[in-house]
Image (cartoon, rainbow, N blue to C red; front, side):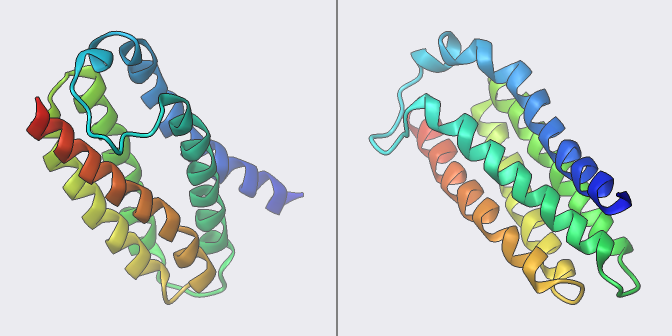
Length: 154
């Protein structure tokens, strides 16, 4: 029972970042964001919600695996994981909340670095957890290119 509660808790923690982001994003999709020039490879808006839901779930499972790992010295994993989650949320606030596309590009670069750092710290505690973060890294890399393209086009 304790493991089930921990698993649910870590998933909910990660999903909270998405919920906070959605508060700033949802109203902007039809408004400010719709007015921006976007690159040809921009996915339809409906894709982002399901993708982020899956990614946040995978992140929560990865964190759960770290918590369950019998290894010691996990403080750097927790710090890096927390940092990337905060920076993830910050990007949404800067991009959609403040409409600062250029600043958001700088934030997403920090996010990429913090995800890599998190994966690096996870590697000695759970390779499965580390690899569960790989789709997230890939998506944020794609989002970085998208952010850069929107910055250049506008």
